[in-house]
Length: 268
Image (cartoon, rainbow, N blue to C red):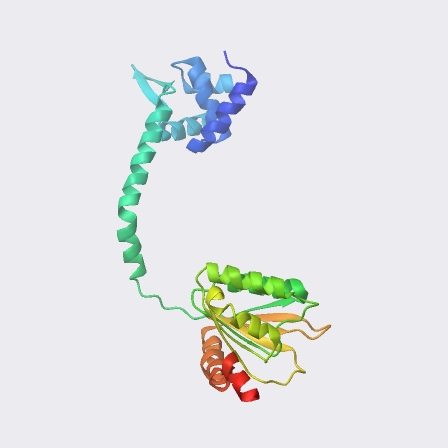
């Protein structure tokens, strides 16, 4: 005999076989009653006969119950517990079939030409948490990350250690980056680890009053402003805007900027 606790465990397990609580209870009742009728099953479950009829039909479709005919009378019987193994075996076969076809069908789906209008997504992140969130999002880049900044870091906002940890994560993901900073000690520090961090860094003397800049990856532009009381990061996801900043702004500035070695030679 099974107790209420056992029945609850069976119901929870049968949920994995796409059986609702009512269906599971009906199957358990059918096992207890043996060959029975819809009316007897409804009486045992204390449920409406019509609702039990529909539950039984679903259980027949799922393989847990089957129908018997004696003369003109219809009887219902439950499959034994071995049906669980048969259903599981059937699932394995279906999954194997899916596994065999998935690569071919995926290729067909990828070959379908897509015509769609690009939707521009704009998000605003504020304060230090917002800047960190932007940096984490950039680690999803499928291509290089480019950075132009009026100031490399603000120690009171994000520390050198935090930035170096970010560059380590980026490198571990195989993401390259190009960076333009103003001449500073941190730029030289990054340059000394450029192979480790998978980056190419150049310096460009800039107006230091704005404390702003941008990050750019894939079709995403992130404009940061680090002025006190105005700290924010505006994310714009738009292919044309990203390409404009990449080709017409960053690449132009990249040509104007100097490597750390060139900058040192010029200052001598």
